[in-house]
Length: 501
Image (cartoon, rainbow, N blue to C red; front, side, top):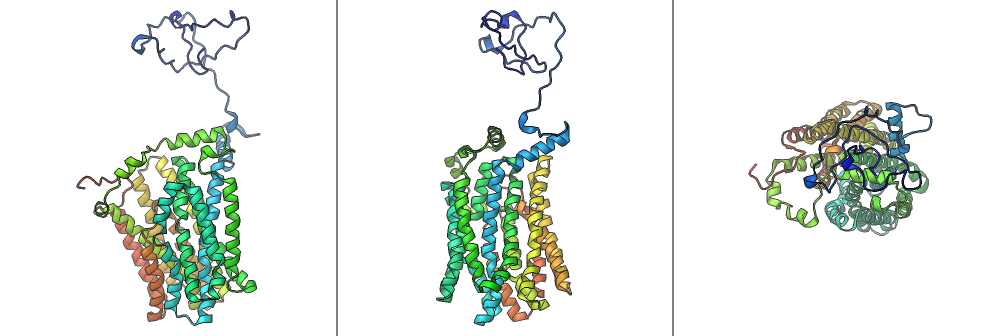
């Protein structure tokens, strides 16, 4: 019997060999007749050809409409596009893959909260120990010493063990480093710096693990949006750390935030291990509809076996011989330079330039990261929409990266000219918010040297010049030049490393 939705063969030669329903002794439901799709040729016909069609002795039946599937209808929703949009949104919000994205966002929030504590603590620590701005820059950059190679190692570990396991170990390790910071600081400066290096080593696996989980859990058309959700948590971590750290310090001392954020990391690990699976197929709570949707969406990407993929990795010399490689390195370097300079030095900047207290300096520095969290998701959605509407991946990446670099470059010039902390915070909000558009065109790791150079260099610049203003102008000019280089040489397509081009 033909399944519903296909034409029943009307020619006698195509009648099924099984007995008709009125002969079998019990009533059987007749299949629905739907015109518009032909039945595939029976396998027993020679060469798969259908016999000549007989004329129909009666008028063809009208098309029967199918009822909407229950999974996409909402109670009380009126038929039409609006109801469909509400149904899709409801399915997405309650789906298992959104839970994965939310937990990834929380992990990245903890990642940045643990990192940004030092941006606030560096002010009282410098006063207590008599550190110069140059040495304060060295202390703040100690996180990056550990972060220098760990994303590469993290990427290899993620490929072998999967994102779930590596993320769990990473969060546990960096939470331990944060929690032990007060104990280490009470013994020696070098032991304290070692905990910061350990923090950087552990946090280096966060983004590779996030990328691995997004790749496994989301279809191609939703991946930029999933990254946007996770990166929103990443930026909210900056806000949480900057807002809460001075409050906690006023009640529990300089190292109070280190202890509290470390404990929250241990709690996250327990929830992650018990509630999240490594792949959709391993999840006991996922619906058949969502599993099928993810699987079909991932089939859009042609996969390769591990051996084939390894054979196609180009030699390092060929990798560096292509201009798109240098465009990516340049963009990553500029992204990391601007990001860590703003993250590390803005509380000090507000306190030094505008003479506000520590809490106000931290709060003025925190507001921009809220905007970055919001616009980070918007940027991911816009990137997805451009690609879905036919815009090439190359043009999409160039548009997003241009917004993410030119916007901050202009805004930093405005910040440099601001006469009050409120106006300065507004310009900083524009700079950091528009910077989030670069996340949809970026990858990680290549700019860590630039981040170290920018963080340490800002301290030495202030020591020699006595002000941050010249360093902000330099950073703005670097943004403009990196944008030009990216737009000329970047590509979103596969690069031919075997050819001469």
